Length: 584
Image (tube, rainbow, N blue to C red; front, side, top):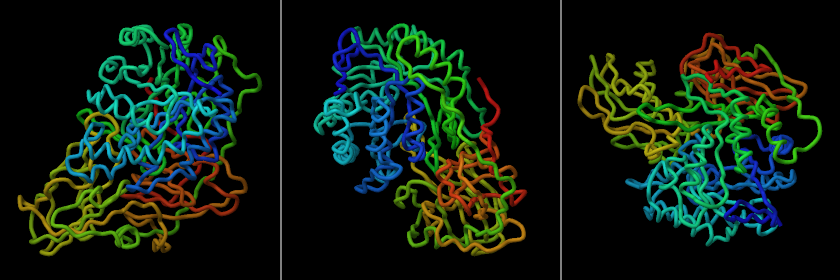
């Protein structure tokens, strides 16, 4: 029974001194058929523990509709970790950050006007209580006190960087205990936030990537006794669209790891294996400018996005071996990769011709544009439609765009408004009275960090033409959870966007691959109905990871939603990724 104890001088596990050597591995960012492979490689690197967040917004996408199956089968993930003799650090939130959509908080919370997230707001706490009541009883059998691998559970996440509502943190701790969580609890914050984010009687841990001695000294200042632990050792970083691909040298990261392990510090790599923001699940940051995170969450981690060991894997393993037992045996080789050049997408379906199929049965009419949250929608797009009163020169202005709006007049492109560039107005000529104005708004990822997490999506505030508010809108949610029923037809040249394009390719044996969309502009891609995520020609990422389990022997189907235009109707499956030029 792996029971973790917290003493003045450090951790004990089963009454023996224990140094946690852990790595972040998010089950929801990895195809479930690949969990066992990633966990096995974690053990081979020398880890004795793995860490994972729990994304509330996937487990409860709609209020009261709780899921713990398939790709969300957390109990199975924990069982697989135990089979590799790995302990588990569980971080159930409710807020997780993680560069994940909305920091893991479900979007339907924002349908409540004025709600204050991550606080003692009773409306928020009531939702958290219901979530924990559904989640925690399913995880109790996996606690160390019951013979399972879960040795500790985190309260909230990085709270000191957000607020000072100690009553809120105390409520979460009481909830965890109320539902039977009797393993040690801990908080994690950046060193400068330890005072605000901590809770008396709960172990404080710190998050940092360098300057280990100074950061650990700050942790010790706030916590004079007890184990020292770095819950997020930032061994890499994440990327934003339009920026460079982040990288950190293995030598530099290994030196910091050596310094911490030599001091007896427990460590959790953030990340050991980053995985992928499949579908529409990436988050965003806003520090004066809105910046959405890319699809890849490779994080320049020891195990790359496809699960292959990189330079840090070997470097970290060598450091770990100085302080803890490391399994013998051959290190894992890279998995086979698949290349299929020149896949022709021969059939197309215009998005505007398929609005009814994609979401027309859920369309609502309103005087002002409704937000995604008011439409009961979390991810994807909203299509707004109204008619214009008169012909002539026009200035279209909107209160706010969340996050990217393509504007059309009678189906023809009139311009783009981007939140990232603080664009809220557009000029054009209205060809006739009664012209149809349609606006396709993309949720590019809810903000996952800081006060901006109250991030409602769609067109916010009044929409005006020449200073006069436009009313009478049809609002159609386009979640794109399924593409069934789209009316594809063969085309000689690709339709201009927004349009879906579809083709097929045949393979003998599935293997990991990377979808290249060179010549395409912006959109999303699916293979055999599995949403690979977003692509964008601005980079840095230029390929999308295709997990081998998504493919099948024989015929496979690929669908691309191109929002603008493409110079060719071809895509390629490559055997190497292209995540863009690096910046160390």
